[in-house]
Length: 455
Ligand SMILES: Cc1cc2nc3c(=O)[nH]c(=O)nc-3n(C[C@H](O)[C@H](O)[C@H](O)COP(=O)(O)OP(=O)(O)OC[C@H]3O[C@@H](n4cnc5c(N)ncnc54)[C@H](O)[C@@H]3O)c2cc1C
Image (tube, rainbow, N blue to C red):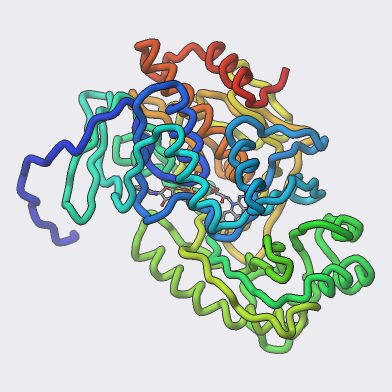
């Protein structure tokens, strides 16, 4: 048995009280806080890092603003955020993509300040450098959270809490049933992103467009690369050749993302199978292994991929991005069947279309399955089965391993966040628990404020 000690009981300061407390300032959390504040209730957002944005700050494009049929399916607050970024040259227009449905390139640095601006304008009280470390409950109802910081342990009391931590920390600490991974517990592996500058992007584009026999892409036609921003997923032959020549490459596909700057490429190619972000030992080991992979991947790109010969590493993302960890078991568990059958739900609060995109927990590859059009996100996937006064939005909402491989993309997480924030506001103003919010009213308000729901 592990050695233990008894922590002495102590009273802790109540730092503040609020109507809605959003825990985690990633894509879901930013939207949740903003949407709740727009209802006129008192909102606080807490974040353990010294900046907001979550995975929007690690060099990823936002996928899935458009649906498979080319129509825009994520609008509302997420689109307002993109408009603000675009106005300062920090986002590009949504571009359809055969593999990813759509991509929207954003500047990870600009995300941090734009999120702060948008939240401050909405009147959200922001507190960074605090880690949510405990739940305060009265019976089955959540009454707030315990935070840890340089000031020690303190309490924040709230009428409603929205868990946007990605890992479902609040839900887990509150006793909500959570699961991880596939039937064997295997989770999609994480990736430490890095960027290269000095890339001859026209040469890369030319290789794909004009020499596609040699430089081929998964699913995507070469014409897709003729103009605008792009993501490569392919160059499998080049990886096989490099491996035969002794290079150690952890992935089967070369995933490169054009940045905002013309000579900038973000590289999505490190991979550490078996990492669990809810275990600091595992996350630390994974992060260290990913750091070690970067020089070899850079060498591979310089030696095998057109345009990289004179490029250099410009930035390494501030943390290794987590594709999958805990999800809650909520009042409804979204499944792959719901996605692939383009299912409608009476309690739809958002629409998504991104494929079931599973980076396998073992090996080096990935499988993708697309629906024909798009599917609904039901409100019940945000509502935990037992604990009251809590909503869960983003990649830790209630979904199977396969379903979260689709709904995890950032546009979808933003839509869930917006709906959760608005629902929390309605619950407070109507004096009902979030589990009993009038969903028709929520849907009307979402549509009236610009969000997209299917007719
Ligand atoms: C390598 C990789 C590639 C991906 N590629 C894409 C892509 O190309 N396009 C796309 O759209 N999506 C992509 N995804 C998926 C997407 O990035 C995530 O699923 C999405 O960002 C999840 O959003 P979220 O708001 O739920 O969580 P996050 O973005 O993880 O945000 C959670 C926030 O909560 C904070 N937090 C966590 N725990 C606590 C705590 N206890 N107390 C206080 N704060 C806390 C974190 O610091 C963070 O800011 C990728 C993911 C990875 C890892």
